[in-house]
Length: 147
Ligand SMILES: CC(C)(COP(=O)(O)OP(=O)(O)OC[C@H]1O[C@@H](n2cnc3c(N)ncnc32)[C@H](O)[C@@H]1OP(=O)(O)O)[C@@H](O)C(=O)NCCC(=O)NCCS
Image (cartoon, rainbow, N blue to C red):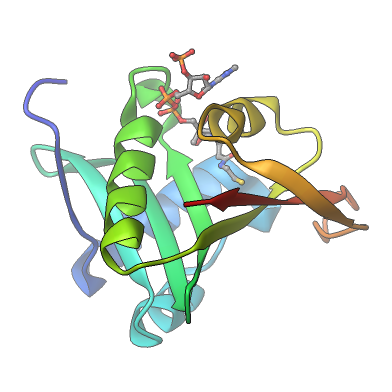
């Protein structure tokens, strides 16, 4: 895991990302088509690369002075090595540069690793969306971080 770099995710990366989505999120995975829609909408996706391999990615949507973290995921065999932290640090730095005031996200209430990650960045809960995840019926916590 030497020489990791962050770069913009491009359309030609989407088949690999869709495979990662399926492996990581199962029935809740975003399809390649939906990922295309995200990029076409101008949403900013960044990935951590180890050579040509994508270890993790994060996608954000800017809405005025609010930034929504739509998606963040790291390959199972690359976790707990700071990849998500690289992605979070990068998106927060860019958010500050765009004078974003708050970052928002949704996270399954039973997703402890992700919640620990967000807690570490000072996100706090502002509400719950009931039965948000279709296949499991799990609730989502809506979280916010002020910049
Ligand atoms: C959540 C996820 C993105 C974290 O990625 P990662 O690269 O392993 O995270 P990092 O190594 O950068 O860890 C940063 C911090 O997050 C927290 N964290 C990450 N994984 C954790 C775990 N399994 N248990 C507890 N805390 C965890 C820790 O605070 C960690 O800091 P530390 O290693 O100094 O203790 C990864 O587990 C993942 O892809 N999960 C599946 C997809 C997902 O749930 N995405 C979020 C949807 S809202």
